Each structure stands twice: as C-alpha cells, then as structure tokens.
Image 1 (cartoon, rainbow, N blue to C red):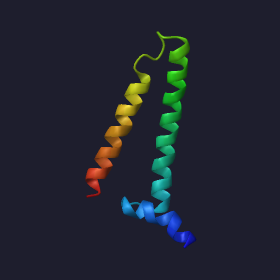
Image 2: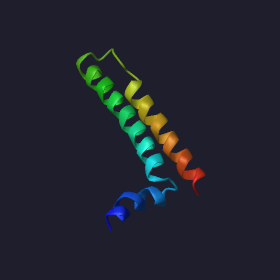
Image 3: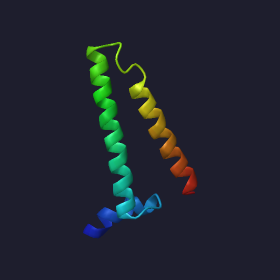
Amino acid sequence: MIKHLFIAHPASVGESYGEHFRHALGFSAAMFLGALACLVHAVIPMAFTRTGSGIIARLHDRMVVNRIRNR
C-alpha cells in the first residue's frame, strides 16, 4: 500500500519515481525563482517585467511536450 502511494502517479505519466522526482524538483526550482522575480517586481515594477510569465510559459511548454511524448 505504501509503495503504491509513491509509484502510482509517476507510473501514470510514464516515469519512474526517480524520474518524476527529478522533473518535479526542476519544476519547483523554476517556480520558486519565478516567485522571487514576481516578489521583486511587486516592489520594483520596472524589474523582472517578463520573467514570471516567461518561466510559466516555458514550464507549460515542457509539461505539454512531455504529455504528448508519453501518449
């Protein structure tokens, strides 16, 4: 049962636990950097004017490409 909790979702997207961990960690790092850029942008509006949206667009593209590849 415990093992199922860790492998069911990664298997459903065609990844091992390690592959899924690596991809999810990469996504979380990019989102963290995007959040920091947005925070700085909130305080200093002329800073990082396109960084947050650019990160979101790249992550979306990566996710869609992976989803299509795994069909």
